Image (cartoon, rainbow, N blue to C red; front, side):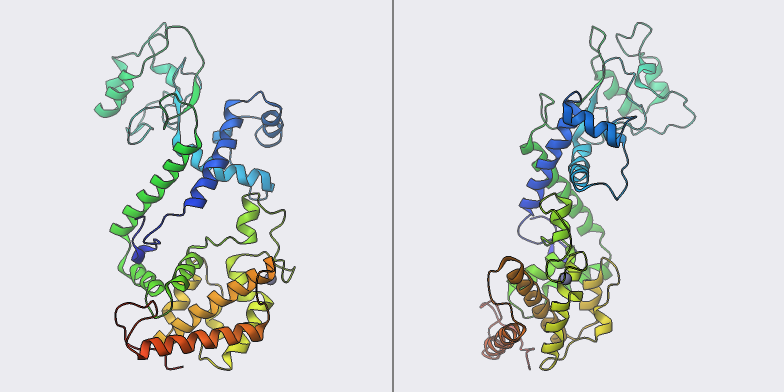
Length: 365
Ligand SMILES: [Zn+2]
């Protein structure tokens, strides 16, 4: 299911919630395209894309939260929309998706020296059918055949955008969700066949070791940067601000919450009294792969301990945010030490941390 673990996939479950969320936001973007005369659509258009259309608009990263969330939905929407040909004056031959088929909805032929730009230029003189002499001269056989199959309406009509995944051309959250899933699966297939050995090795570090599987699942989410942080929720319009509620200083990214927030640092300093952890220098942010690189530099025992620590740091962070459990550093240290003790016990009795199979003990304390 989804990507293999070694290539960064969760290995057993897709991220249903994330897909559903994106599908819901895609619906908002769809409404802007499909009801351009609604008050909301007109305001958004005046503000963000006075000229041109929504699908083509590039937005600056400083856009409002509302707008950022629409953009997130739009990303998905763009993968599933298709232009339906009317008079062809709005559809760009080489750039727009307009060929209804399974694979690419865009033209696959090379433009070369062809000067034609608009689909209308491919129609015959009265605009009621394709210029069948022109098509094979411009396109490869596969494109030419598919284009010739597209029916041109008998009465003059504007081009319009439809949703390719539904026969009636109307957007549905269900099909958008399935599309989001398919896209992720598609990437999974690609990744599992093409992930370089080095990268595969890094992802194996996420799943190996002797910590409980809930901890590894957490580490995987942290490595993929898909934890429900303020930052992530803010982008999806679920929070009014992206500032960390604990320190009220920095943006609450997953790296901040688990490494640089003063609470995270405090717990790390406290547990260093008991545990041999990687140097502070190794916890620095080196880019989106910071965690993979950190885990790669650890010894086996350090890696297990680092995973437990990051997991605990995140749970304490959440306990404070949502007032759902113990929040003090001493309680967290105590919790970590007893977790470590239990694991050492399980491992020395010949089991593994998840109660099945045998695994060598790497928990010397
Ligand atoms: Zn903070």
